[in-house]
Image: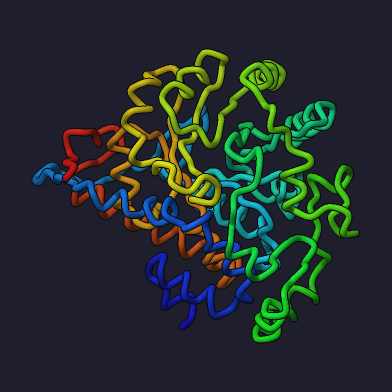
Length: 381
């Protein structure tokens, strides 16, 4: 199978599985504990049906949206994710270029493998910085100042990862950064020599956002220890309020799931919240973002933009979320598997397929703009 033979999420996933060593594939593919929330994220969309209208004159379709002051050509964006150059040597460079081509937003993680500054040079489109809150307050201030200097439009503080989730697939393979693989994990790498050749013939793996603060390459601190030792579990609303004031611009919280937390976010000056359970990778058994969406949108009112991610695999999933009031929808694994399979070409194909699906599905719904979508065109079983 080639990338041109991929037509949906499952095709991209199969191709990525063929290329990646099992420990890396499982890192992308896996969730926490029994992975019940991971499965529910996509399953939640199936309990909701679309009710289309006909004869509405849908010759021209405008799928653009404005979210947190950023104009997007389509209502999906590439959520920030960690360690992308492990999946393909182009990493965030591929994602930045693909997002720019399709006029949408993308993000760089604190655990990103390309610097904020380089990603900013690749794409002139909206860019977010996905930020983790560290015990070292001076480090937090320094990283925010760096993001502002780089021209980042939106600060995205992840609030559901004050400690790492129980990702048992990673424990079985011994996946970590730096690599500390089990015997079976090492064997899986040996079975995928093309990945190893690509990895070792390109520039050294690094985490540019943390290079000056954390010794990853020397083995002094693993990713798991980074979460447990450097991030601050005492993070509070007062801390976030101080960050919002210091940033002085578009600021969203990623990982909000309750209506009460969305209301509190609005009260301290956030301009957006992202309903997310971290792709089912943190608290297993938590509710899906789609199931919580109507409740949170109702609580937020017009005080902040509500976004969601988790389990989105189809254009119809996006339309269902927009109909419930989401301003935009974040994609994660949906673009990571294509990235792993074929780099920039894979991400571009995935985004183009999603664009075509949304446009076609809006026509079939009888809608010429996102603003025409609403709860009236949904029914829950």
